[in-house]
Length: 195
Image (cartoon, rainbow, N blue to C red; front, side):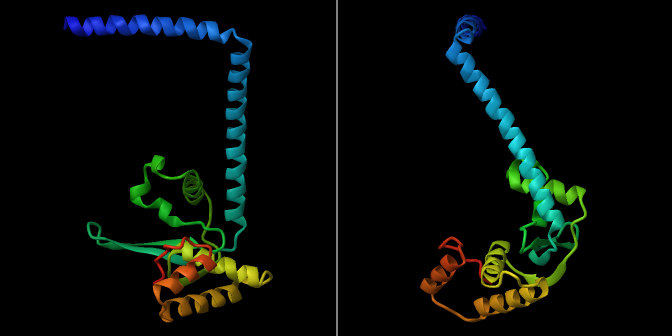
């Protein structure tokens, strides 16, 4: 018990000395400017995040989505299947609403924006396909279609996407060709979710 009291007293002394030093530094012009700049940076970061959130909300709202199924998950405890969808155009992904993601601290900033958008806005418009596909792969294929056909309409883009995915899945290639294919689609070279 006596040892704990001594440790506590020592911490109080050290803390008191640090508070005095901070008070002295706070009067220094360079430190004042540093603190002001840190405060300004934080303010600008907050504004930037708000504008970015608004941009993403607009992107998701204005998108005439082309939906694919990103995941089919059977919950044995509930006895039902959960189907998650993603848009190959804007990247909106309903997987952010899985029960395992209810603690938002585990979601990235972009995923949190998606989560709040899905929870608060109407978002189900667009073309619904029955395609089960990795969203990263689907977006990469769609991106290449848009590069080659910038004025393509959504229905034709969907058909091109289905054809491209069919050939990717059904024409067997060796690992070297898969790596080359991944690079052409701007995916990581170790991408391995083709089926």
